[in-house]
Length: 71
Image (cartoon, rainbow, N blue to C red; front, side, top):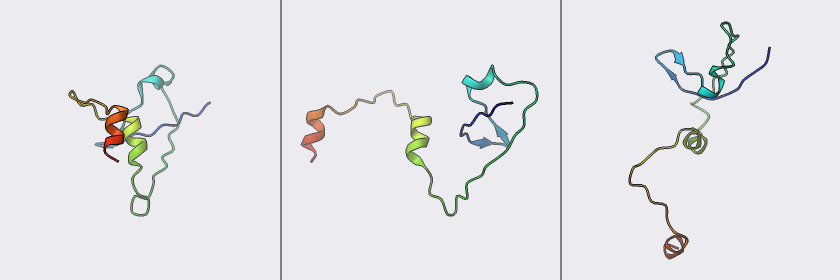
């Protein structure tokens, strides 16, 4: 037995397994849920955006000069 760790959202009581682990999953698994207490822990927005980036069709990153113009 080996462990796989990932973060995901529970939607309608279901947990989605990331694509990269689907082929490694056997018919039976042992599930242990570690739930963060959201009342005391602020959301980890940066890691969530890194994991699930927001895709915008008209996104254009700033050029270095544009960044320094704003300072």
